[in-house]
Image (tube, rainbow over all chains, first blue to last red; front, top):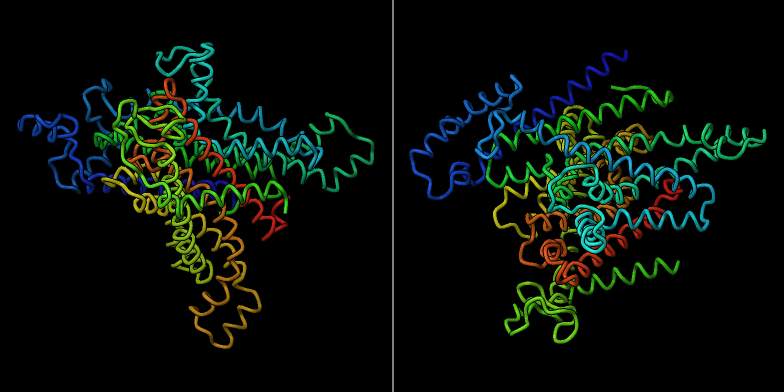
Length: 314
Length: 267
């Protein structure tokens, strides 16, 4: 099958499942208890205000008309209006555009930190399997994936903000890159634990390949040999994992955003579900789901591109 | 057996004992309302101190072990069984069954797992252990289904399955007696890692205030501990260490299981 058709087919199926997720979320939100009008306007709201609120949000209409109105909002790209007056943005999509950068920069910087830690550590570990370095790296990896972010985060705040007072804590307004350091490190700790094992396994596998044996018997060795001959093959599984982790981070930052009081997508979603701000919840879910399937799709394509042995299959 | 493996088994044994008979030996006393009973430091009447409501931290930790183990085991058993069954059926029968099961796994996979659980927990008023298990299973079965499907598909054309079909065995018998047993080693490896994931997920949900909210969860203890870690570091230290150590031990033993059941997969 030719490449263009494969890509189109995969994209279509991915967007189909995103639409399915959004419709399921739309319906479940309206089935479960919790009235947005009461939760947002308060228990003492006057009936006239509630009526006006429900009229403005289409909540007075029947379910099929609500769904139709929302699908229209998706089609014109506005994703509807947020129910809460405290958001001064006209549409949910502009609200998401405000908040998305906080999540994206955190996810990307965390991944970069994780790569910087995991790639050198994984290579060093693989050079002498079962050696001292190998054991240390594997031990670090196990600790990295075991320590919960919601414990590590407060501990780092305690250490760097409270005791040493060299980095800004969550109580101060977000101004510069220094604010990104602690949350990114918190996420990177666990991520590098996952990554390092893949780097190590990848390097070990390549080192046992015939072509490496040939290169070695020709007298190649040292860092240049590692960079030119071993790394490219070893990093293929790592690229996939990085993609998958980046996709997972779109939602996975939620805990760190909570701990460090960062106004990202995950935090927006949590707050919106509490007050049943349906449009904002649906918008967040849509953003995360689209980002998630798109990253997976790109990983799929990149994978077939960097590793010609894998053929694209529909 | 390696020394570290023995250490891991010892810790796991301690957690299991705490979960099984701990609440009998150290029942929850209820809050200490005497003067100095709130946020008491470690030592004295309360070995690990008390929290902001005057509850004994050691008693809560023991109760938390039960929560963690129940969620970990129940989630893995239920989602493992459901996933293996659906995946085997999809892989062996193919056709419309395969299409339906695969569409369902795609829907689950089009959203990060922990967010799916968070969303589901919001829908449940006054959540308990059972609700958490349900929320984790809804997102958890898909991994097992995909694994079992792959194995079932690779077995479909093998001679012993064809032979079973030739002598007229019904599909049901072939699936349950001949295909599903072949998936068990792979499912078991996945499941042993799954226990650690489920324990971490329960702690995360309870930390966010969406799971167990009565203090009998390590995650929930951390959420109240995190607010007070300046004045009372003992509140955040003990549950965090125990949670991390338990997950570490389960992962380490899962690694061992993998080496034992499938030596080729691990290097």
